[in-house]
Length: 82
Image (tube, rainbow, N blue to C red; front, side, top):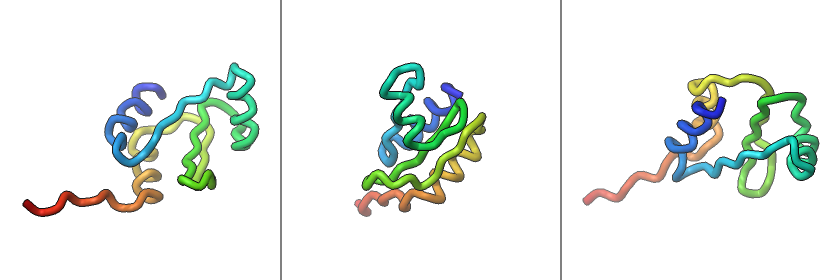
């Protein structure tokens, strides 16, 4: 999963903050429980107010993840004409 997430992180770096949480740490376990994830890997999309928009547990291919991101994100800002 790491190569997929790393690739999407590069692709969406101007629009999304990616955060990795290690469930083997105390803070990671607490976050895992708070988001009600049931297994590994777990993915959560949270808006700027901390509201969970989507979560998923299990392997996820890049296209499915990309489609979910695009469905939840506002359109990218277009550069002004030169």
